[in-house]
Length: 443
Image (cartoon, rainbow, N blue to C red; front, side, top):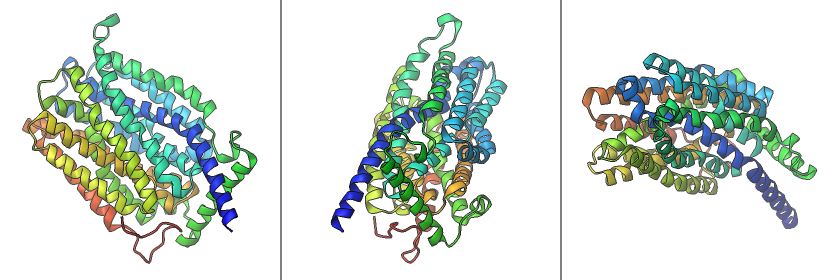
């Protein structure tokens, strides 16, 4: 018995190691490019808004309208990814969003910016939930939070790299007749187009097609994932169809919860450079460098909290805690007056958001499988993107009306706190087993 258990542990270690090394570095690179292209408008705003005559309210609407396009096309996009194959569909997504980002360099006013940001949302629709689904296709449940945390590292890594890179690109102002913010969009859109080709050939759609695994390793991974699916069906006492998944109460509540989470992330994504600039007298380049600090802290938080959640084998309380901590960070940042304390508070807020993400995307795969999990994840992300629209627009509107970010940061704090409370309230009871091995032990 002990020998069989040791053999199982050995093959699991080998297979997960190969999956991690072969897929996750490339997934991190793709998601970094995605994140940089999604939020580079926040850095462009440091000079673009003046050039285009854009006030805070207009910029907030332009930043948020991205999510309306995303919401409209997300569910069909993720279902198509499930049916067509991750490598084909993710390559299509990347190519089209790269073209749109490059096109943003040529807008001449608010209307053009609205149109291009909406089209960017349409082009990107399905990328993040598609990558989440891809992890579910490859990683057994007990390893999922840890490896999701590795993937989520793309977000803080993009923040660490994207800020200073944006600062350098903004300094190309006047080169070949282009403004610095135009170079920002051109230089950061091109990698997505080029990586689309690599994605098509490199990403393996399913474990069954993984030639870089031996026959025994492929069979072990397929059997393990299939067994988990069967347990989910048995314990849920039903197999969710796509329609049933989209109406499932837990899916809908997760979507509601994700609205508050996404308000925190999208708000800070699009407005952090401007918020940091408001804290002192830093130059634009200094702002772009300082903006990397919260993301450095978040990278450590993602790894440590993902491991903690897997070790405790609990998701909901481990989701609630970082969201509440993030809310406290936003609330504190609303009242500090010095740049030093402001960066500390914003770092706490971003750490809470990112640590929450490492656990959040594990939850749908604990009760949905197949096309149901594809649709369920897409619906959750679509609902969350409502928050992605609300936050940038609300911050711009509040800043325009009050002249400060105090009330706007309190709105983000309230949204994050509400999501934390929801996560705690919907945790399974001790008598309810969502999936074998998902324990109810305390954090």
